[in-house]
Image (cartoon, rainbow over all chains, first blue to last red; front, side, top):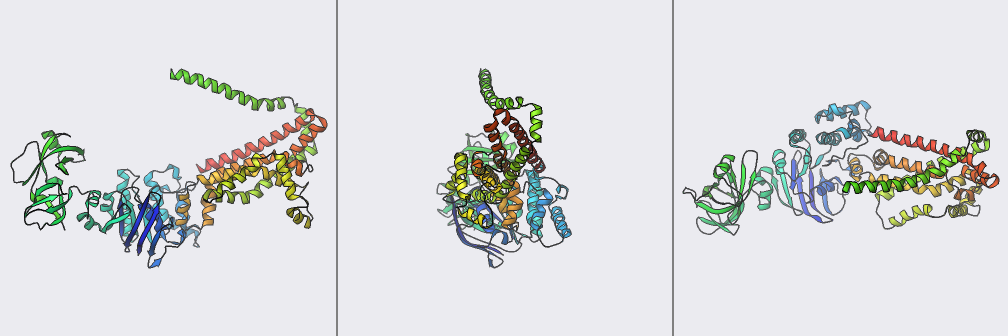
Length: 346
Length: 264
């Protein structure tokens, strides 16, 4: 389907090195990475907008690396929508098919079909200046989909939208993918990857550091960066010291269950399974650490408390507990967890 | 305290600005007030004057349209390309603005005289550009074309390259992208440049008088009437020509505004 082979490019301050990706027909592939790492550049290379660097872009077994932009049959939707400001919605969507040798009626039907798919049939006579971000994004999608691209490239399509609009657009993207359109979507938001993709690649400092099925990548992050970036907290490298002790991140010694065959590996300690208290408590938890609260971050239903025990430990507690124990940033605290709270990543 | 300071600064600026406005308005107003409606009416019936105004309008307009065919693509090229000699080319385009227009006239005369390559080619088909409307158009265009090129280049530079790339990605050919995206989006600047080029052509005297004293364009006629008959005779034709120019200027501005409004 779409294959990127050894793409390397240096543009200004950043560079991409040896990017290899393979998309199968029907894939929803998310390229996950921080802002400014070159995700957009990669899409523009696929679309032919940038022709620097080395490597190959293969589409349906055809090397399109040297093809002109207009002959590539990949559609790109930009983060800033790139709607033609002097054309109304109808004219924008019609633009790709306007010069096609098909009847006027056929063209009109196509515009209506894609306007309906993207839920903008009521906006067809409006000017882009009077549309919201979400509406503009839908116009951009309809305008690209009307070209029936072999692969759809999406550059942070949800980044500029508020939460309410994001949900609607996510459903639309899912629906488009279910209709058989292969999608390569770049974003910095791991939640988008979870919600939409079947495959994901994490890009960091110009290189892909992990790729594969979304579930696998999120379940088995290869390093701390991927873990943090995919929303996983308390990801550590552990080294076995004896039968039931291990050192994490080379700093803190913990007790592990002796059934864990841990030599040197990656572990996750679930934040929900760590108990915080003001004083040391007697319990079945074998790991007890005194630490200092660095930060308390409120979330919708609970709080994340970052505790420094030599390494930063993220603990999830309820609002009730926070109020009851009067935890404050800078105050001392005890953190306890059972060895069974430690999950070994194979 | 700050408010008071700002107020006195405003007053100083308004006073200084007012002096400049007065400097622009006074001579024109003086000329208008010194011309009686009867004089103006008589002048507007003078066939020589009418013929001259019509010639000036027509030659400047046709020259503008003809040269726009090359100037607009050049502006687009300059807006979109980066090459070593770009600054030099931009500088060359501005030369006609900074050189004395009589010198520009001499340069054009050398370019179109019978001894020149262009003159010889024209002669072979029985044409002599010297003393011919084509010669006048060339002289007008020479001094006024920088206004069009600069305005159009600014216009094209303001069109986001991304919109053009989007259009290409949507399958449009580069020619279609130029005519359906770049040109319409830069049109406001281009139109403004066309108006400026046309207006500058109308008012050209120095370059034209060297290339063609006859047929007489209006600025040359004003000079001729002044030289032969004095200020009193040159004034009504000046007022009439200014009025005609203003009418055209306002009409073209209105057209630009209407276009803007439709695009909004």
